[in-house]
Amino acid sequence: MVDLERLFPGLKGTGYSITSEAERQYNCIAWAAGDDSRWWEPDAEDQYYWPEEALREYTVKAYAEAFLSIGFEICHKVTWEEGLEKVAIFADANDMPTHAARQLVGGAWTSKLGQAEDIRHTELEHVSGTYYGDPVLILQRRRTES
Image (tube, rainbow, N blue to C red; front, side, top):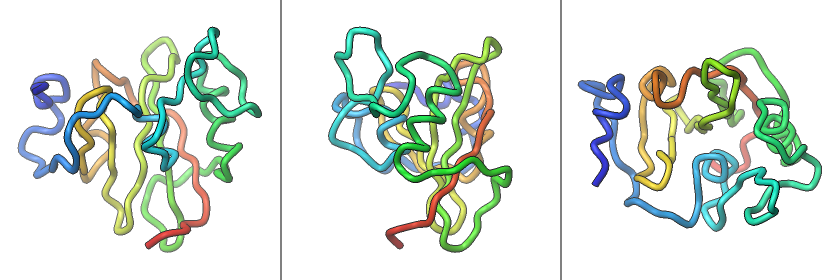
């Protein structure tokens, strides 16, 4: 088991919860997109799933295009809004995308932590820092489930 609080010190004392066991079938990008059946990655070898409409490269622009292709649009409010589902894309200091988190009903967030567990955390900053960098882009779409 991964020591989540060592990797993400912002989780300490926050009341985060593990919502599923470690799983290698999908990653944080897939999880944020609502897909727990496959790994999403814009690898040059086409080994993993990536939306055809998106650039196949490791850039924030390409990750945004992946979410735009499934009905998201860029927004500027991280706060919870009734009827909207939001996704935050994280990047490191070199603007390399590193993570995505999805907002749950009520405003908490869910993150798939690499090949480790999925967690529920109340703030995006709880998984920010050295490992994932910071949220650099927020996208939203109409929520289809409650």
